[in-house]
Image 1 (spheres, rainbow, N blue to C red):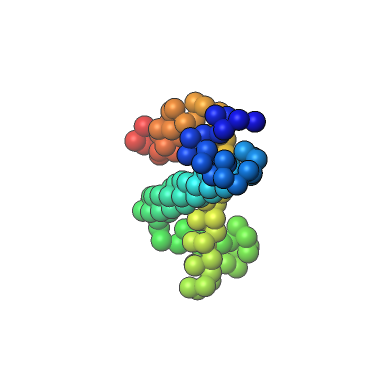
Image 2 (image 1 turned 90 degrees about the vertical axis):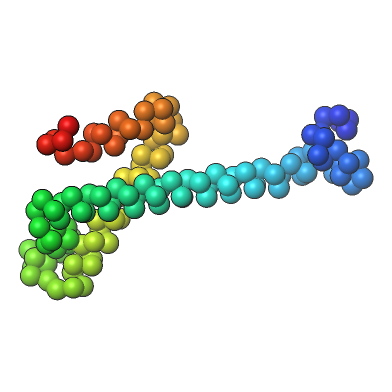
Length: 133
């Protein structure tokens, strides 16, 4: 291996230490992977928060403020409909869990299906209520 095979930024280090190219490039790859993970988590977090908040607000506006109790009833049964604050908060948490899960699935699918990245507004428009489409 020659020094000209190594990127210019690490050529001096390579010449001084005698390390292989792979060991020099490993920290660069690790940093890149960590940045990709951070951006993926940020995209999922923002998407989940926006989708969850808008969906919960729209559902509460159309069907009343007891929507989180109905969501919790899906897990706990009919007795949750008469629940208090704890059951209400559980319903909100379950709702956002579903929203974050949907955002994660969309993000994962967009890594393989290029059109999801190119036409991301199609997903937003498909979630709009039928009354405004």
